[in-house]
Length: 606
Image 1 (tube, helix red, strand yellow):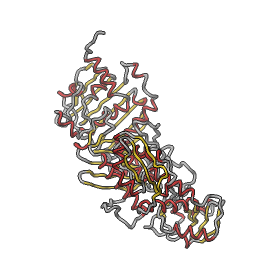
Image 2 (cartoon, helix red, strand yellow):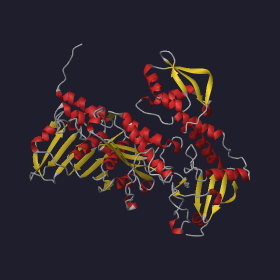
Image 3 (cartoon, helix red, strand yellow):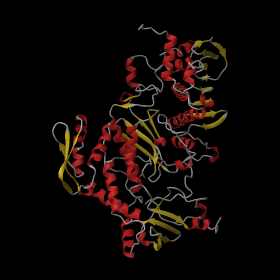
Image 4 (tube, helix red, strand yellow):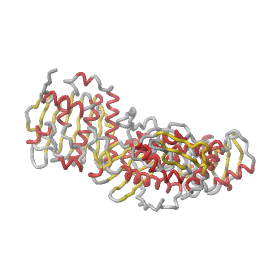
């Protein structure tokens, strides 16, 4: 078989396929270039999902006339000079492939002006063929227009998604960039309609722009610095969660990325307060030395590799855990002796009519931000927890929700025994009354919470009783897996597991904690091995799962009638000993209703 040396024209077309996957990837690359040019205003405009037209305009440095053609040559970049630069990349774009790839599969034009000249210049590139540079007029900055994507490669064009799907991906990435660069003014136009027009202020206003006011009311600020790693941003309040991980945004040194280490750390910090298949919301920034993070691991630049993944995990987990801990123990400023700096908690007021709706299909590579389906999922949203910082007081009519109880409002319950027991409802709920407030209490969920806390406290306080196995459990593993499990041996011993090596390729478990005597050990070991990729488990998911099961089985069941003594004991035990009134599965234990809300239902007040 003859071997052919491909000419540069074919090579460029092939390279374009690696960089230009879709209109989304073009928008991302062009926004990266605008930000690297120190732009403070960026406008993105698309038509027909970006297939027909993409325009990205900025007020950055611009490109000198003599560099205009050079900018569209393969592997041309102003951002790296030698191989040493690859170890500490500080810019968003750096490969030098984007403009060359884009111009090879589209009809592209460049209009640019630098501040040191009076004239702007214009250049057209049609499928990789350069036109003449001509004088023009423009403000300082750069405008790149990409038309008829894949017009000269119809085989590629037919594999594009439907225009609306392509549009959703672009909307998603623009949203992420608004969150990653909150001080930049972004304008985003789709088929002539302005979707975002955000003036650069701060991260909280950016979150409100991308999501809504409800989101900003249900998040808390986190900040932590350990050595040369700084973490800051917002995470959801306890009791406020999302149905998937697409509501999670991570920014590393100004670059939006997707990383499972950080996602796992946040989830583990929240796991005790999450319902099944629910996930925390977060927008987190990590600032760290560029030499400690590799952004050159994938052409899309959406993934990174950390030099010390476990250190990143620890910083994120601890910072978020502190935020959770402060909510359920508001009088305690720190947890595990870590210091915490509390930021100003000023919410930015925004005209509600200016908020824009976006609806994006989930995508495994570029997570979506879907406000449309999240607003008012139910007609009744319970108040799920309380805050010891506030005193319980009657809500005024003006303070009451206009249509329904507010979701995830934090209130305080100082003493359940001070409440009048009105009665039981459906043999499932207790009805309590005090002053101008009514509480519905799910006694099964409350009892389950108490039992779960009792079991977990025994584990945490190392008060577990070990149960010897009549027949020790053995499992064959690889050398890497055995080493990983053995590194966890001290922690497993504290939990009540006696574990060791058995021969060259097996582990042996001789004892288990009495609380988990029925545990499925294979499933437990397999679950531990899920953390093999750089994660350090805390109270492992499998342990928590079995503790939840045991708490549920030993709790008062719905439909069972309680005696007055049992009711009083339950209220006494719940009183202040459990600042988080959520069952282990994340379901609310109480729902709080002000008298004013009930009167509104009956039209006694307007």
